[in-house]
Image (cartoon, rainbow, N blue to C red):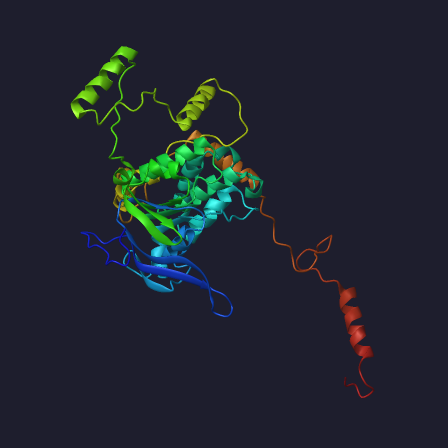
Length: 420
């Protein structure tokens, strides 16, 4: 185990590099309360699935929070994508599933994923496509409109995995991803991690469930008490050098005895056939086989569905993830050119002449026009400023009675000297 050693130089810049990383928690009086991480040194390469293992309280979650910039190290150095972990610019390239799913209970699954998609400033069409694919992948399409607070712990874990992938991250951090999941969901998470690794993503997987990590990681470190106790590649750490395993078809007792005799004879009696047993399948394989058979029999269930395959935007290369800008522009130019060509078939207008008549409307256009005209109210005549008399007089006639009454009214207002 190498501790406090310089980080090995690699051909490519590591995604995460930690050197002598230490985190000490102190109380109000600045007395040391706990040394959660103690001089930890490791690095995560691009396109690598890296395991961070250890029992509860070994410093796994604290190390992850230091990588995310949520905590400041007491001492040591750490970089993510070559920058300080507190740099906001690198957050867009990271997906994070915390140990506990902190979700807004009043939102449903679609609203939850849409909310996180907006945080990454994804456009509306991209968000909708990814939400549909992620809900199908985690098996929650049938429950996408239910509030998250009504979800079981396993279903909340599934939607948490989906939100960690909504931005198609380059570096994915999964802290206890299989907590609360049934064996089907656990197997699906493993397949997803392997798929992301094949695509070239970097994954940090933290768990104390060793069976979940064993099948997927390329390299790992094992923590205890905040220190690295063992590190290396998976095959090198798990291979037993002192024994040899031979798998053969079923053998009778005489053949087994003959094999044992040959081993003793050639080793001078120092080695022997220690045990002969029939191999056992993993309980996970048995369980998944039973579930698959039940699905083929179309047995009903009210729990989360198995879900579909990995979302296409997580599998495809970036150039295949959707229509490119050049293709979209080309299609628009083609459509515009076709419309211009159709317009060009009409005779051009000559100066001084009337323009050619437009094409005759089709029956469908006439029906549509009639419907639109029915919806429009008939125009009303403008109302006159003064009400007209019921029996208007002919032009040239004068009502002398009305004129006289007006003159009489003016005379009553005159003063004695004849002036007003």
